[in-house]
Amino acid sequence: MEASLQIGNLAGIPVKLHWSFLLVIPLFAWIIGSQILLTTELIEVLFGVPIDVTLITEGFNPYILGTVVALGLFVGVFIHEMAHSLIAKAKGIEIHSITLLILGGVSQMEETMPDPKIELPMALAGPLTSLAIGVISSALVYVVAAVVTDPGIAGVLVFTFGYLGLLNVLLFGFNLLPAFPMDGGRVLRAWLARRMPLSRATRIAADVGKGFAVLFGIVGLLLLNPILIIIAFFIYIGANQEATYLRYNILLQDVTVADAMNSPVVTVEPTMPLPQLLEMMYETKHLGFPVVDRGALVGIVALADVHKISPHDREAMQVRDVMTRNPTTLPPSAPLIDALRIITGQDIGRIPVVAGDALVGIVTRTDVLRVMELREEE
Image (cartoon, rainbow, N blue to C red; front, side, top):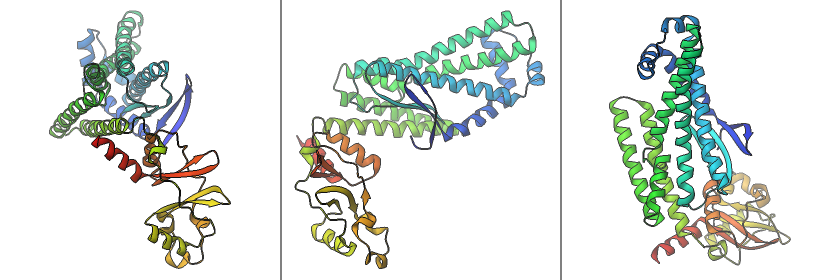
């Protein structure tokens, strides 16, 4: 994930920190610190443990205490994501990283067709871990009340553990809402996929997720709660993306790059003048070409590369001056879905297909879409 800084490595999984995380910690610290009186009353009622709020506010800066609780919450979020990742890793799924960001955490996993037998325990692992953290934190409230004799320190610890216990239990419940692509939505899909085709199960789970997103959005607007509105937006977009991703996977299942590529390939030399390249594009109706020098692929050039140069300067320039060197390539046997991921992820229009050291074809965005259209008609 871009704009993230790797801060460590745990169990072979890179742990990253997104820049938005640096914004949300001060925000949460301010919210928690400014609501200490209200939250203390709630914790006293829920746990039945008296807290002398005067000793807390006099002995500790409320916003420092808020920072401690906010950091504790995100440690819990990190453990939640680690639980997902460790279960996935045990099932043979590669974990690229875990990133902490503004709305919690996200595990970057290998993109594979969802398997209900794997997805169900993987989806449940996170919320159950949050529940365990909540139960342990709540138990520590009573341990502190019984062991710590200093009322000021006891009050701070009861407040901290009580707050974290409450938040983690709420996190458990919230994550189990069937709002796909949240954990509860994935549990719903895994359950449905045991009774119907995966595509239909995904569509139903995505529609339920969109329904929750609309509900969150309406409640957020009525309560003027920006957090709910942001959550609604991400759930709606995430449900759409997940349904689209699965559709692509199903349509391109068992299709290789060789099935879609164009061959033989029209190529250009690195010494070709740019005006001549433009004429060739106009004549062939191709907007990009592999660049070959003495039989070896050395780059790829597209109309967008030429457009970066002013018309006046193009007269004195050649293809090698604007081409992309060391382009991404694929073998003919690669799954076509890999080509789609590269094309969309890198925002490129075409990928050279190479067997050994020989250029044997080229696959474009249009080629992939054409295959999908044909498969939909089958």
